[in-house]
Length: 90
Image (cartoon, rainbow, N blue to C red; front, side, top):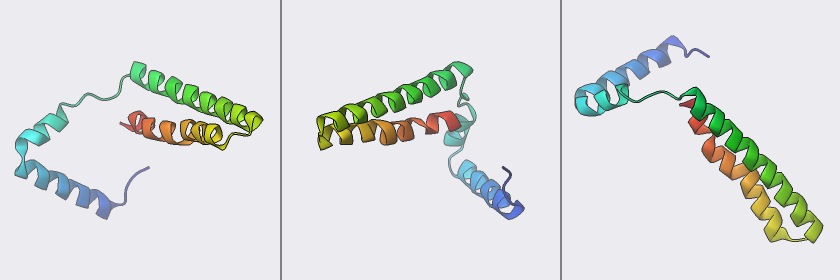
């Protein structure tokens, strides 16, 4: 999804300003490697495993009538994949 021209221009201005303020930092960002297919696959598999484990823990917690176990499953289902998701967008 492309940005509107004015937002694209603002981002370029910010990038140029940061590069002029700290050229070493700008150089380090240019050298950052992009995600590899292997890392994307591993991250995707990890998210699927976390979602599956979270759903299973929620199910077990419901059978045991344990709010603490259900909460743990909810954390595995919602929070952990959310934290891992940004790796997919790099």
